[in-house]
Image (cartoon, rainbow, N blue to C red; front, top):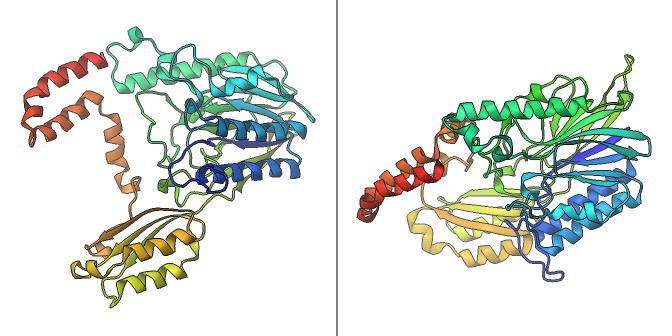
Length: 424
């Protein structure tokens, strides 16, 4: 049985791009739809039996009609070609208010042959043209769905994480007990954060206090032939043991944090082993034709004509064609007046998909590292900050503000009291 696993399309994200003059469509949406079209064509060309989507179809829980229409068209295209589709709810797919509908609930109301949307933990048979695939579904689970306020009282962050992880483990064990037909292949599809996963950088809203970070051992069960995950935007496999646990990663690049990441989806073949169990015969990552993100740093400090030198260097950089670009120009203080930024911008905007920024700096580029918010050298500090309590971070911030703002200094204690009440 051949499967295709993808996630995190984030349609409707308009972070880097512009409105297309002909269609009125944002170029970031066009880029992601081009990747989706490539995915659909690959599924058809390679005879895929089922497509597993591991969450976050849209960037916002209340997407505009345009990305909804375009996503629906691609799912229908898969259905019309006899390919079954499972759609799982991610955190961006869930509404903010209790009782509200998800944008993906339309797939539960308008019946499309072979297409299923799953919003709650469940086990379901997914019929395909090569037999039935059993799918254990683990949609995104917020902290509040796992623990009550009463259960949280008095727990620190490590204890909260342990308690949430235990609840997810209990949920997986309950779902496993519902498996009945062991002659059919079984996979787990989840939108979760697994320990050891490398963040891409665009998951800025992830928080160690709002959701569980689960050990891979919870998901690596003999009952599953494969574990297909979404939520983390960097493609990766977690460990080397079986069954494989893999993040497909986001379908296209969302931000400069993902500039050097490969983007795409996974195609895999399941087969029955000599012992009668199902396993992965072959697993491969298929890159999508997403836009290039390019950071350009030009040292013009020794140039007699910095503008022309910049234009010459930019003209030789083939990465910039139809790319999302940010440029930093390093000059001496006396060269600022020689720079014609308007001319440089005009030339670039004719070539690139989107010019994010042109920055002029007078410091030495050899002493200035490339911007990298997720530099591995800073991960210890990053982890420390994530584990600090919100009130501790607020205390530090207010203390810094109070040094230069007398009004904040007077209100500091009152603000902290109110913050503690809110947290409680």
